[in-house]
Length: 261
Ligand SMILES: [Zn+2]
Image (cartoon, rainbow, N blue to C red; front, side, top):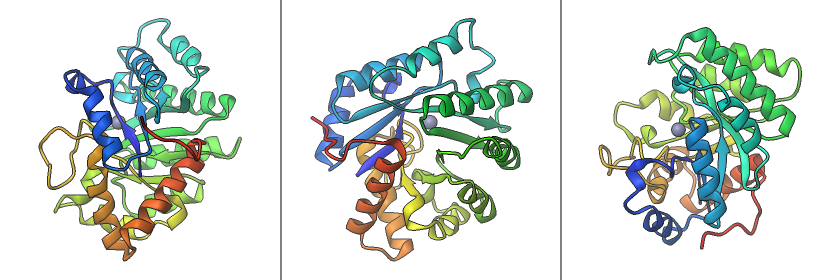
């Protein structure tokens, strides 16, 4: 079982980060991808990945943080992208829900991340909130130049958005939101994703799945999202976990023998 998207650097884990990682291992996880959202948190992600077996890092500036990026921050991301243990660029993307950064600036950074991922031959991680049409348009433009390799993280779009992303070669990842009662559309979409393109994640410390909704999330809880999705898809949990772990290894190039200490 692999949690493809967590933020292990967050202050919410300062008191017990090592226990959180130990609980993930005890719960049967073989890998966690910890994701940066700024230059500083990307550096922290690389540091954690360097210290903890089975933890891998993604580096990038999340769209809600691009306005506060300082001179040199992008160069830091470019540098960090060369570190060992880096398996992806991101999270990047577009967000029309919050208004922390102008949309043109978000688009400019999104394109930059896609370009960096291409240059480094790494997959990218896309954050998309209320900006599905814009994200698909930017991705289509990028795909006209080179084949894409990436994931739509914590997917909340509908089936036609998912189909557009699948057509572009992307993976679709589901987080705890899929377990919430109101998320009927998300579940309907999840059922329609081909087995070789679906991923699971926590987005910890945010968005804990039922039955931990409202509490701090952690990678060990990814099994609750997996159970929900496996049941919906009519697949035995074991098969679903094996398949999604294989998908994560394929996308992020994780070693087959990956294990947490
Ligand atoms: Zn995230």
